[in-house]
Image (cartoon, rainbow, N blue to C red; front, top):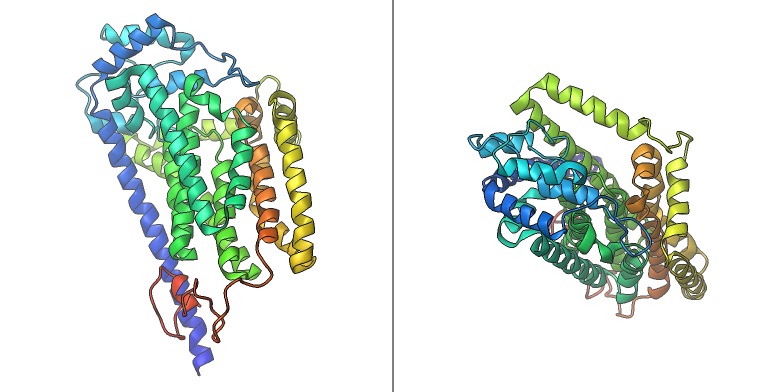
Length: 464
């Protein structure tokens, strides 16, 4: 009798938890829209005055200047970001501005546009194909501290989130695993150049690390809350990002939860389950958040107008024509690997360092747990596949923007390296003596209690 009732209860439990997670995600959309409105309440005049000063000092643009770390910088997007929110009629409400998101030109014509806005010109250009959530940060900082201050604070935010990600992953696994997961990205990309040349990238990178933090912190309480943390991280990344490198936080977050569960429980089936759930949930939350932006646009600006905009942009980003872009299957992945190897001066050092760590981990894992540990590492490293998947699905974008999309290559390498290192540093048996019921002092006596938010339940719990 108990077995016949347990399965329906378990299904109801999963449905209830799924509903809660989706509820959190839906509520987040309204919070994000509210934040956009808050960002638009910042007056344009101090922003324009500080941008005029940056133009005069030569710190605004131009596009595609060298980053002095092997690639070109993303100053093009930087000009777009600091100009987002400008150009609206002074009488237009903050809510209306947030809905359509006014914007002036990029670096090529942006300087003249800034001067035109200062003279009172109104621009009829909407930019709600993205959330443009960075305006919540950029507009007040630009108004108070100008371009140079925004660069400093963008870099500060990036470093703080990097340190937070390291500490969060270390707390759920080990110092060596946290290092292996994050160091290849730092040492194998132009990340450290972004505050001075591509502040928009610094903001996006900060939220890459924030997604890892939220996933790891959720996993501290339970795998379920780790999934919810990944979903919130995906929503926040979509909010501030301009479709730069979603595959990076996607892969890192999925691996983080799988690694945390494996390290705590030493059960591959559960680690794989929660890793898959986190990876799927991250992708779903990212897409849901993006579509929500369009839904707000359709509700406030009109259905036909929004549908036309969406069709144009989705079609172009997946298969649009662009000089030098190949439509061959897998071209996005192949060209980004080639770009990373040929342009990032430290790429060969990062690759060889990772290969050496993987080789050493293979030997240690074989000694400690047998050859089955190699299979465990392969399963745990599965989220790395998100990177080539993204390169293939969004081939046009991946090839046009190789100078920053290539960061996915060392990210995939980092996930694989961290996975092999994880199974090597984990002893075959726990260092602590297990209790008679099979748990350790680190684990709750009712392990199922932490799967659904940490609430104690008896053995007939809906979620096992």
